[in-house]
Length: 473
Image (cartoon, rainbow, N blue to C red; front, top):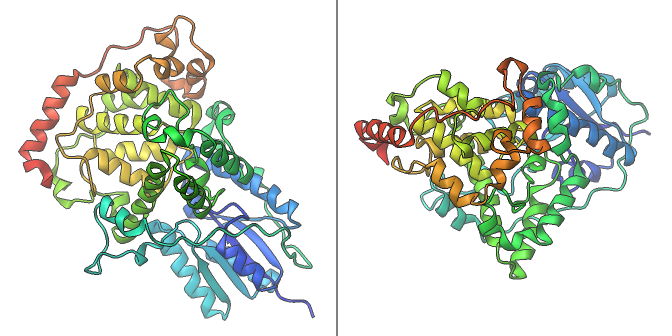
């Protein structure tokens, strides 16, 4: 008698290695039908992450094919799609890996309740995080609001060892029909920028593992210092792959922990960064408003400015502040931005330009291929001062002194700003190929003068913060 199949609903877990949901499904002995659903929540992704997701789906489909399986693509509301697939295939269960952003939690709760009511076996599994957000509590039973105590609470916790990918996945006797990925047009909003960014992406499980191995083979030793130097290859660049689940966080943690046990100098700092990612998810779970509103409500009355010409100059990488513009242009050329650059551009927008942090948050959500809902919200609120564990209101990064400190030889600036070089390189020039033609940018033009005096901008921000009583900092 043929066993009924299980449906595996893949989302941000596009891998076979280190995936608890998959291990549980394989252990059932039932045929497996992997599915990816382009539902309204996924349709809402910004241009760059949606384009990059399409690349990840394509690579994952090839990985599944090599394991004797297929990836079924369907478009529509998740519950309706899953109910249709159950009816078509006779599936008796649906498995998935948990997500933690507010929209996904609402969707998944509805789907789980409806499918269970139909008598199906429905299981959600860990897979995106090392520690489920509700399992880390303070001594009083609450959640952590500050990173350092959170780090102390989890640094000694056991993290389950990663499980190897199965060599083959049991297939059903009959496969349901699938959409064609090209019909989804996931990259449509990227327009001409896709061709530029494509040279910098590293897609799929093999690429992710290669990145991890390359980082731990050498750069991890100088990570504590080099991670602040944007001209150096001092970081792992795994954020792109972690975003789409092309590598498991447990795999990364245990590899870095081994490096730490071997006495590698920068390994502990890297481990702390992995826990910072966990902390951002911990906060998003317990305080979901962090994704769209001031985490500290006393900031609601702060006199943020809305969008306008200065914010537009910031968006276009034309503020006249080299560190700010370099980082913004790096994002358009590579799809990512160095972490030091993210701090500088966020501080400049929210403090020197006094622009609401949600304007930057939304722009990053449209432009970053490694966009992550928790990390993006945490980073912007930290820089603005409105979030948990935020920088004090008087900490205003000076982009001019920061660029001299962290890019003393100007390598980062010359790499991405054509106007600052007599013979600009291909990446500096490709910025003009990536951005909208409507911006009318031309490498032959003079680099702009600063749109705001840094001293005046700093004084204006400090006066506004002081008038609000320091906003609780």
